[in-house]
Every structure is written in structure tokens, then in C-alpha cells.
Length: 598
Image (cartoon, rainbow, N blue to C red; front, side, top):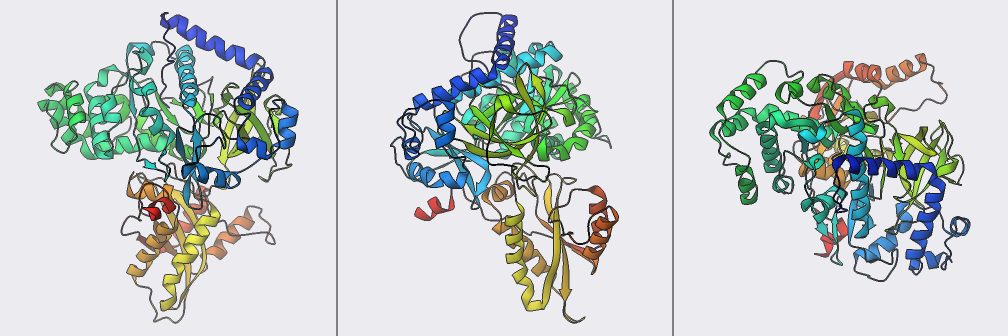
């Protein structure tokens, strides 16, 4: 993830700045429990008068024991009535003594809609602080990054307003639109190929086109490349595959393609774009070769690493990134969410499978709910940052300055080691997520309900859905959901028309959450859903295979999502036909209930 500057305007050299950042990490990890006690006391002091704490009989006490005794561990659903009041315009101090400045929309959903995380102005400073630690850490492993530019593909997404007038938007959109980002002082580490105007362009095609064009024009200056997620960076490379001829023409002539109509973007591009026939010919030569293996190092030869998130579900993109980058290091620099920014990776050149994040104890008050080997919570009592055990899995629980108290984030982390006395965590998974391509997260219950609803289309044809399973297919770009269906059809003469199975595809998509539908309809980060019909008896063969690997016949249940390559191969070998969603599902910005009020 790209880093932001530390906005403390102090005049000292880059070396001194780096030293100060590294010393800060040393200081806060040397006695993290003491730091955490101070953070909790600060949060509770600042928010002593808020309604939520008073409701739970916390009246000004700031000690850990009383806090844990009185304040329950909660999920989003517990908080939703308070969130709704704030969204509808209640300005009283419900969760925070500071005014809620906006809502950050989470990629996690509740009732099919994005979760709304309250935030306050001061949180932007905390996010900037965490960003400012990234490059001093990176500089220890890859020196000289201040001598060139970063080619990052960064985008803003659509935003909406709550009935009470608060903006609701993703955390990165909020950050890129803030003065912390737009008016950042010059810093060699935040020297990007993309002008701000191209990043802030709402049109995703024009934004991608202009950012790619800048990256190509400045190809010799690029020392690192990246995007937020691995999926986003791969989409950028696929964009180049589709549009390199047009981009080369712009470079050759020094003029913008007429498809770029945004006047602010055009003006910014004219500062970068100059006629360069030799560069255009070089890019044409590389892009027209039959193999795109190593295209990143071929076009941007000075690139030292790829900066993208490849942990969790993003790990499915590692082989594709390795192919395009010729095996450049894949760097995960930080761990963050809409709820809170958490920590940094202090060993950024480690293998992707060994990424561990050191939680910075000044960001929020952290607790950890132990999770058993079967993925279930072992007990209801969370432990503190200083009490976690090496090798144990925990669900992260946070208390933030912005008004979340003992909130279950839903991320499962494993203690992988320690930095001084502060634990380092590997990201294991998001709880209950079955399918994910980009920032979408679809769980088994939601998938089952969508498939159940769609299967009603089969009734007029005397067909019944016997079994199903699914997987996230990332061999296509963008990736897409694949559902394997085994049908029972009465009578050999009955046939389910292809158009009905296509209707089933779109019916599933229409029933999925708003993050998925936005990815399909607006962001174009997810491809059309596919149903693959399999021959009769396929799921019996799947069970036989699972039993041959040691599964108990008495306890076997059909998995609703599969990731194991041999199982996917087995299912694919039994496919008789396949069908794609013929159109995008409906999606509009904002929450359903807000749109109904308009």
C-alpha cells in the first residue's frame, strides 16, 4: 500500500527523519502494555461523556479492569441502531465526544449493505503517522528509493450521503481526497508517477488510462510499482495488454486520446506528456511480443519490488504477479481496515507466506479473542496485546478513538513472533468468508440464500438443484465466481433452456451484497458469474474423493466453497455445459434504505 508523508513540518534531513521513525517503532514496541494502558485511558477520558459508555454504566472510569467488566464485546449488528441514529442526523455524542466527520464504508457487509464505520477528523493524523513509518522501514532493505518514483495505481470510488448529510465512502477514497494527501509537502518517498488529478478522477477508465500513460512516459524513473490489492495491480497490467497501441500513439505524438475528456486530467497530463517516438517504439516492441512474462521488468527495468497486499484471499494472485514481474519481491507493507489502521510489516522482503505485521500500540486499544483449531471461539474472554501466545490464533477486537468499543473486526490473526515485547501477527483469514475476488466478501449463508432463490427459475422445467459448490476463479481477469450445479431433471425430454440458466446467474448476482454488485457494475473488478452444470453423480464422486483423503463418511458435508486444486480439477472434468450472467446486476451508491427515502 502506498505511503503518505508525516505532516509534522520539521526541517531535518531524510536520514534523520528515517531515524526518528525507526526510533518511534523501537519505543512503542519496548513496553507495548504501558502504551496500551495510556491509549485506553486517553480514549475513555476523551469520550467520558458519550451515551454509549454511560448506557453500560461507565461514568468517567478509565482503568482497564472496570472497562472490561462493564463494556461488552460486540459486533456491527449490536452497534447498528446507534450508527443509524448518527446516519440519520443525530449529532449528540452517542459514540464519540468529537463530531463524526464521515462514515467509512467497509468491504464487509451487514444485511447485504456495506458496514458504516464512524470516524473523526483526528483519525486522518493517525493514518498519516502509520503511513510515514513504511518507507523508513523499507529503506533499510532497499536503499535509494528516494532517487526515483513509485508507479502506484490508486483510485477513488463513488461516495454517497446519509440522510443526515454525512459523507459515506471507502477509507482510501477519504484519504486521497483529504488535504493530508492532496496538499502533502514534497517528500521523495511520496513522489508518484500519477498526478493527483489522475488519482482523483471519478471515471475509472480515464483514471486508469492516464495513470498508465504517466507510468509509461516515466518508465526509466520508476523504482517500485504497486496498487492496494494484488487484484488491482493485475487489472492494470491487463489494461495495458488491451490498450497499449492507443497509449503508444499518445506517447509518439505527445497528445491525449480523445477518450480522455476530463479537463482537469487533460491539463495535468500535458505537464507529463511530450512526443517521444523512441519510447513509443520500445513499448510497442515489448507489448507486441507473444509472451508477457516479465513485462514489468521489461518496460520498467529499474523496478525493485511490487507493493501490493497478497495476504488472505489475495494470495490467489501470487502466481500471476510472479509471471508478470519475473519473480520480483512482493511486498506487503501494512495492515489496515475501515475500522482502524493497525500495523506495519518490519520485514517487507520476506516470503509472501511469512508476512507478519507488528501492531503499533498507539493506533487503538487492541484485544484478542482466542480462536480454536476448528475456527470456533474457545472462550468469550479476550486477552491483551501483552498476553498473546506464540502460534495461537485470535480474532482482533478494537477500541478506537472514533467511538468503537470492544468491537470484533472479524479478522483472524496468528502470533508469528515478537518485535521487542510487541507481538507480530500473520493474517489468517476474514471470518466466514467463502468467496472473494477483490474487496468483496461473500459468506456461505449469503451464497446459499442467493442460490436457493435463483433455483426457483428451474421449477417450470421440472428441474431440481441437487447439490452445489463454488470457487473464486482468478485465472480470468477480472476474476469471477463459479458455481458448480448438479441438476435432476424429470423425464429425458425435458430440457432447461440456456436463457433460463443465464437468468439463474443474474438472479444469484442480484441477491448478493452491495460490495459484490458495485465490483461488477461500477468498478468492473469482478467478472460475470458463471454456472457450470456437472454430470449426474458428480457430488458422489466428490465425496468418494474426500473419503479417500481421510474424511469421515459419517461427518462428510458437501463443501460450499472449494479451493483445493485437485477438487477443482475433478469438478471441471465433469462439467457438461456452462453459462454466464448476461448483464451486470443493479447497483446504486448508498444504502438501500437511503435510496428508498429519496
